[in-house]
Structure formats: C-alpha cells, structure tokens
Length: 133
Image (cartoon, rainbow, N blue to C red):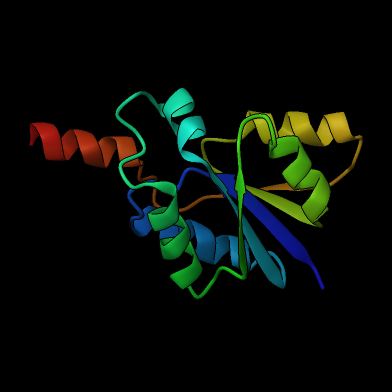
C-alpha cells in the first residue's frame, strides 16, 4: 500500500482544495492529510486566520471522499508527523512546500515530493474578493 501525505491549513475549504486532494489521492492508495492547528495557522497566515476553527476543518477534510485519515500538526510537530506517517510520497501544491522538503532532509529520508498542479486558487484571494468585491 502506497501512503501519500499532504499538509496544509485547509482554511475555508474550496474547489482548489478539493481538486488538490483528488489529485493527491491519485498518487497512491492511502491519503493522509496533515492539517495545521489554529495557532500555527495564525502564525503563518496572520491574526485573522483561520476563518474556520480546527474542528470544522477536520470535519470538512474527513467528509472528503479522497481523504483516508486526518492528522493535526503544529509548526513544532510537523517533523514528528512526517516521521510517524512515514509516507511513500509527499505531495505539494504548485506554490511548493519548503518546510516539508526541509523535514524530509532532516529525517534523512528519500521520500519523493510530487508537485500537483490544480486550479491555482488561494483562500487569501477568496477572502480578499469577499472583503473588497
């Protein structure tokens, strides 16, 4: 069984997230999604984020038919998540995931990182459109 790992905030779940998860699931047999806890999202995205609290984001991800398991991580525990899951492949979006690549290097593993290109939609852009029209 080929395990695939993706990580992210998955705040304000949208079509881009769905297509990313669908494409990621196609890279293996079991898709595990690491979702950032609220404090991590605030530290990375800013004080007004996340829009949805962690429990809502988990519920949305678990409801997605492409997702087999959801795990929560913080900036400090992301390395532990990757080590625990021991994925056969990691998937990143078109905007990359430098921290994930650093973690794989720190762990000394040769897990391939596959880039998935989907409709380039960002939650930040959606929020901006809602606020400013």
